[in-house]
Length: 512
Image (tube, rainbow, N blue to C red):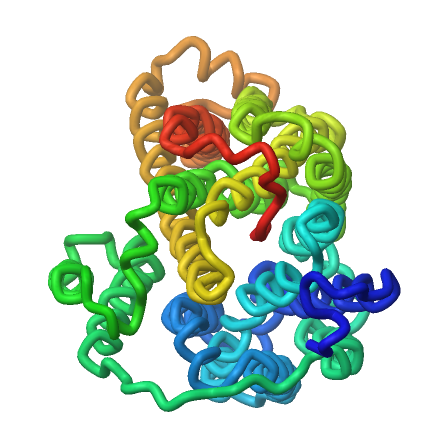
């Protein structure tokens, strides 16, 4: 950052808002890529001729690399400096995005997605800390509102953009779209950042290995658990034992250790610890519902991919408006904890409304609950970040934001796996329950098949009944899953009580 833009100096508004735009675009690179690729997976699978298990690795390779590297943000900032790190991250992310688009095999694609995840992991934590230091306290609210607008709305609208690019261009376009965004962000940001002093740091290789082992094994379990019937698989059993062992050793060894690879003393602050707990639980409500909604409308209601993508636009607009209003007005006038309560209630209510829909639901029947959830989402993120970082000093912001980011990422992975397992298991339960009450002599079954001139005892009649039972079982399973995501939001309400009330002059810190 130029000296003029340092905190406390009379920086022009033009320079400050250039920084806002640059960091928003930088953060959008990472969060957009977490959802935009999902829509293109069927086309990628067909292009490479790969199985579902192989397709999953295209997603998981990015997530695993990101969650492993993100907590190391503060460590690398101290080692090479913030300017070098963020410029390297933008360039590296763009380069691997281009290579993903040029990939000719799934092996090359997975390797390039690993590279994307490694470099992309630094983008949001560094963008947050740069923006935090560029504005005086009285102007951080507006800046963080626009930052949050990009960070929160981008993953919501990612499926829409991915659907458009895939439909009218190619699956490769979902990777190429990162290049102009990266170039623009790099051009604006590089001129405003100054070089920083660096120092040689002794690497805690044991702590690093334990952290990588714990996070890597956890992510492996989440990615492959459902397809391998969870703990019936020896691989999942080994991964679980390794994860628990590495995590326990990492915490016991690193607690109070000054040169640990991650500063665990940050969790002694109850607001930071509570915020990490809340952001992980909130992922069930936010990411869980977003993950299964396309499956519900495309697989069960028969929506085409573009209509399924457009369904997220009202949610994204509502979330954006709510985010700007919260960051620029509400959080400076009300106790952030009260805003959090309202945000959680709205998010949970929107998801419960989705759980009340049936097979006759139209576009706006599906869109309005998303608007309610979007409003709640916007009311959640800025107050939560205000409370999370209120006691964290500037010298620890990079590391704290990295930990907060990996908690969100791991939380979203756990939550998506939990909701996916809920859909699959409840579908089996409801199918067995419904099918057990139907026999060839059932009067209702005979009445339903009569217009088709079929009989329950015939093969065609049995097939018709089985299809109807499967459809109804799927509907009930999705309803259960949506209700679960709504209840998850309400369960986070007591966690808000853990958070400390901010000082009267506290303002939004960093929204993720």
